[in-house]
Amino acid sequence: MSLQTLDQTKAEQFAERMLGLLNSSSLTLMISIGHQTKLFDTLVNLPPSTSQQIADAANLNERYVREWLNAMVVGRIIDYSPADRTYALPSEHAAFLTRLAPADNIAVYSQFIPLLATVEQQIIECFHQGGGVPYPAFKRFHAVMAEDSNQTVVAALEDHILPLVPGLIDRLIQGIDVLDVGCGSGYALNRMATLFPNSRFTGYDLSEEAIGIATTEAQQQRLTNVKFQVKDTTQLNEVEQYDFITTFDAVHDQARPDLVLQNIYRALRPDGVYLMQDIHAATEVSGNLEHPLAPFLYTISCMHCMTVSLAQGGVGLGTMWGQEKAFELLKEAGFSSVEVKNLSHDIMNDYYINKKR
Image 1 (cartoon, rainbow, N blue to C red):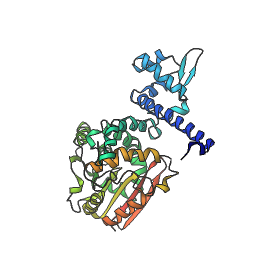
Image 2 (cartoon, rainbow, N blue to C red):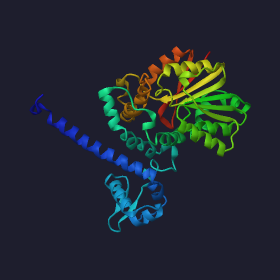
Image 3 (tube, rainbow, N blue to C red):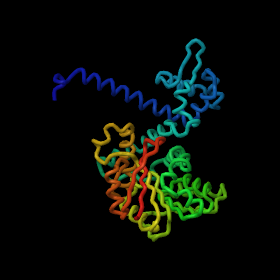
């Protein structure tokens, strides 16, 4: 290919886009810092203020706060008044950057970018050698996932997610046996245990760290109807023990998702229901061209979900396994009735309602 034969207009447009991506990725790092330091939450409660006033309110170092603020100004995220050198966060921007609006706080997801960057060199090695990067290599992953889960799952459980299954809330009130596979830090299960004291809840996860967090929270809340255990659910041998089983974004990064789904089917009682929340996508990449989060999700897949599966000698299904593959594996597991539902607050996930009969 000769550069002289290029469509110059198309080339210039792409160059402009690349510059935009470079700036946007840089701002994502700054947004993650703003979220973790609670600078956005501080700004939303302040009138237009100087960098020193903002730093004092947030109990942070002024020089770092000032440089961060300036990145936000040139990124058109924070407003700046040169006359009095004050900064302000517009309310329209605060609606997507602060903890006041948990369901819409996109700043939470910005944390994934610096988190994934910490394993970049290991991922590059996998490109050359194959294999994968194991879970322990991802520092803060469980903390970020727990925050993600809090705003997409926990906050929506009672009013949106559980009502997707007809009659489920009444059964939970009366008392049933519930299992959460890949429960992570246990926030969803502890919330359900609080809401429905007559039901009995069990959570399994591979991570000792996550199970430790879940158990500690349950103890602090004095919950006696929930228990957590470190367990590889590809080895789950329970038969017809549960009335309701859940997975929240937990199937696609399993080493053997097919075995996990088969074990879930076996563990479910004949009249039970399995609720699988997983990523909204098509299996074929051409079906995801208009997906608003496709680049983000394929990146997470390559640098986390796919690689942690491969690190365990798994199939490396990946984040974007899609509805078609999900239906295939659910049917192979034995589920004869599979229905997909969506929630307006959650553009990231599909909700599969699965019944044995």
